[in-house]
Image (cartoon, helix red, strand yellow):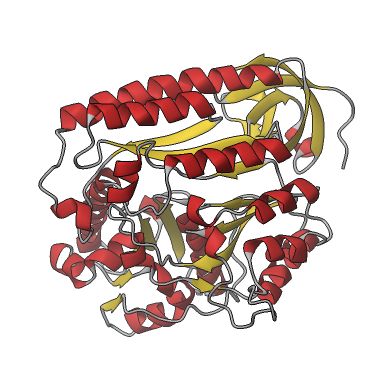
Length: 451
């Protein structure tokens, strides 16, 4: 009698980079003969891919782990793994806190999962958090979508923002070669994927660690060059990229996005604060004036472009007047979407040790006020879509209404309309917008879908 195949379940916390890492690790597990299980309780191997940007994400991991650690006492064959940023930050301390763990592995080790598991299956308890050169992606990821795909172009981050733990946990910048990136995208095009998102913690830094420069001293490999290099891959209809840093965002990149038809008119450029003194304390390396100039330049080339960003309120020492400068920036620019967070001190970051921390009440009040403004401005921005025809790439069914499908406009607005998913998935459909909300749209399809 043959043993039934082992089942695995991955829970992912945090950013797009983590989602991409999880897809790669799922691909490795499937290559090893494991089968995906939707139910963690039915899985023989459980992997938590963790995030340490906010304290609550970290606490959630510990509560999940506690449940599975108990289960392991009844099922000794259960394999428990913590991957990602909490694993990198905590390392062996995680084993002391949860001795039932089999493997603790930082994000740089995602491609080594098979080697590490083989050590586990031989009876070792493994911690892999040492800095490594990231091996080229060779495993086919188990992607969550059949329409859109993440493509990592640069790992790590060399910035030293005073609030951020990412450089400590994801390591120094390591760019993939343009040839390797294009090869991955070509396979995606052959497999029927229609949209790719190029990913990097600081994507504008792409290529500066790769060898080679032109005689005028300009790097051969920049994000702009990469966009030109991959633009003509057959089958791919849309290209996005994230996350950008205002310090490196150039007019040449904006011009390329305007010139290249497949590159979507959507830019995610975190500003974090609208106050120069706070930006300086954060070590962000730009002023709010520079940020505004970037947005003005984008809108000069692409007046209708969508702009999204990230902002932090309640940074240590932030005064009410400084917070109001953030509100002013948000009000002046009018973002299509803004990810907001109250400052959360992270271990090993300079700002966590400063003695000018603000109270939770002040942080919570400011977050609420910012969110209120963000929703009002996003609703205003949405009005421009009413009555317009937008190209929507259909991705899935509306989970709240099975008669509707959902997808995104080129500007990344989530859009719902009536239709049959089996017929429309992966197609670009012209949709007349009949209803607008702050962060999503509803419409009706105009003609038979175009392939």
